[in-house]
Image 1 (cartoon, rainbow, N blue to C red):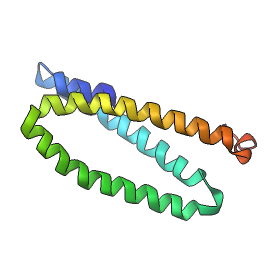
Image 2 (image 1 turned 90 degrees about the horizontal axis):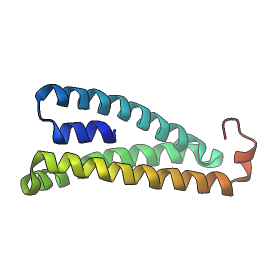
Image 3 (image 1 turned 45 degrees about the vertical axis):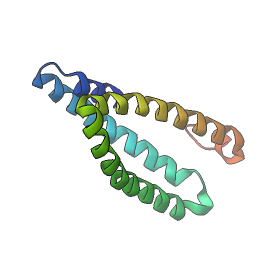
Image 4 (image 1 turned 120 degrees about the vertical axis):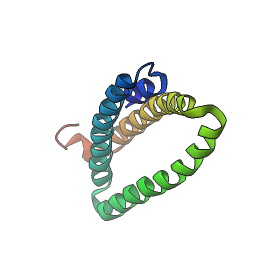
Length: 116
């Protein structure tokens, strides 16, 4: 996703944006599914709440994100927004990986689950 956002932000030719969109679409598919799976596995006792909070966060984030990005585009233009989004997404990914590692280290049930 970072590569796709960056390609769209710095695209010198329209075909580069097409590659960025393809990369971004594939990345979103993979990232969304990963988050959704982890949302169902973080707490077996609260699985329904985890899925509901995942959906709520996704939809509120999309709503608020569009509003905030519209102001950012007015200030920096589209290139600045896409480049900033690429850097922000890289930081978000690192935060997510660290939080997930902490959760797995602290959770006694994660030691018994496959794939951990």
